[in-house]
Length: 457
Image (cartoon, rainbow, N blue to C red; front, top):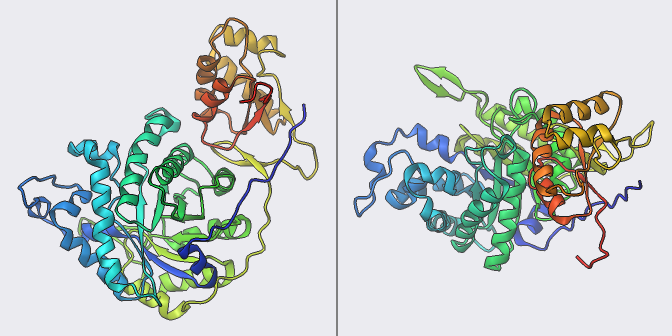
């Protein structure tokens, strides 16, 4: 069995923001939700002119009280920030359904882009253009845990991205990503939306690394980058939310050393502390600026951003301390790699060849075939784990067997393997439908084996 390794393409695009980013570090503010919380808005803020009310829905403020949002946006642009997030983090059908607004997804996102666009345009000049970032959050359901499907995310988030693009947003920011499968589905939605609207804008993919050192489902930063690097839709990669800059240092270092794309870093204003019954962020503007200066000058990050709890004062201090230098040249060490939900495995091993565990192959392993026919998922998982324990770097999964429903079998196996097998998977089939089923279930970066173009697919 031979695996051809073709380095994924990364082509820097000729887009205004990306062109500017090659010459100058930019500043981007994103603490819209936390700023709204700090205002302690009453129920009257959520009442639209026609009387319709959806209390507690931030995105509804684009309808009911756009002046509040405009004031927040202006406070950041005023201190010299280049870009500010729209109020659209939860404007996807899943979250909006909680307020009875799912059918208005596109409308609310279009309006969110228009509201921030008005403020952006007041501050933007030909010499100093300002930008609006269309924030696209992860929603409340994790596809790798079976809460929602890849197709449901892609279809729903497509509506969100179309609305943002129709409203004139400058950047699509897929952010606070906690599940790599959700991230990939949202990025596919962004690509769909740009094709449908005919607008190509820069796309940011930003993951959230918890204080545990991984994403919520256990993905380390290497797994995240290995998964995002091959996706041509992604223009900028980054980390945002969950922790302050101090806890991000090593993750930022890794991205800067290994990503071929510009790096975006948006920490919270430290870890929140409960003071008088309220969550408070205690990072000082000086500390925020100090860490961002390290990220820019030592590591080579390109966008100084801020998430929950960050303030105009923090950005003013960062701009004063860092200035607007040209981004540092970063010698990146690209390593082609496969990735599970948890970790990355380089294709080229330093002291060995890539070892492929083949005992979860229905054609070559009678033990696996018997487990597959018995639909013994626990037994199949145990067999895969045994191979990993014995030194396999990746696990081959082949379920094609005469008389069986290949897509259904692959769905059953990968649904279990994706969270219970720590090493990356190889999806092995000559049937396109079987491979497609597997890829829509898998959060990491799999290897695809045995597909051919003999029939002209």
